[in-house]
Image (cartoon, rainbow, N blue to C red; front, side):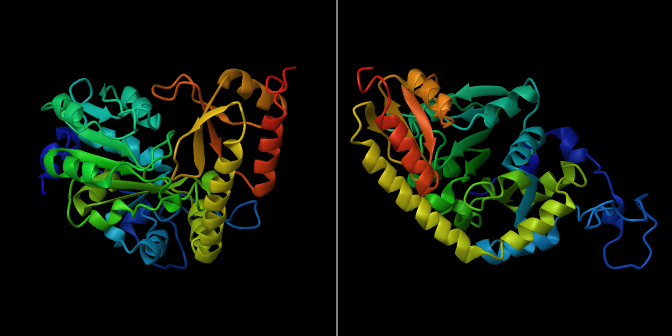
Length: 354
């Protein structure tokens, strides 16, 4: 399916003249840089950060291209995936007029960003199997629906969304379909970045925060048709990714083998933790997961959560989230951390009748 991206844009964004930074106007090497009002003496640090970073992160994008096989002109790098989410809303959704569709339970920042941008949120809950309700989505779409956000593998449920259902939306929705793949490295399902050449209304979000272990650097990526990437680059802050984060991310991306080992270990530990938890009386159900966490239905989730906090073990209480009633979300830790969690749950006072 091919749609006209320019027609989807807000008028003011289409007409916008972007800010032109010093590093946009001059690219290359020079011995004397007197164009950007930087401190010429350096930085009070072992490494100098007195110069502005590459506003388009070209070296980082080239490294991502080598791993993902996506040309740099189809890659946007943001301050976490959250920046891409916010920019998509600002580019395509007119405040007070347009709407987005989300499919709860799902990642909370879609809703927060929409509220910040005064964009109406239409919620179509997942089915009890945590899959898309295509009929309800079709009934919910109107002429002002601009973006559908789908998290797969989904947070907080952990399951992958049926691929054919996402393709149905891509083929029939005259707007942007965002597939958030923050947890794709832990899943059997292949990434939707392979479908970018088929759908110019597809945006795939990924991150270096999860499998790559760089949550503190805040590096998120959006992969999309060049028309969409050009818009995101047009409206982003000029230097949205700092030099230290760019440099460290490039270094990290050299260590693919180590990351693959961590992914295999995490998946193995996930399977082991599920098996061990299943033997405990306080566990009612463990939902299938393709992420680095599991959603666990428990007898008394809030009491168990507080008990774990007292022991210094922090999980996520999702018991008040739609379709996740009675559930805690547990991230897969190291083998030692997982054993400490199991020991704590085995000695939970209510289990022992204390």
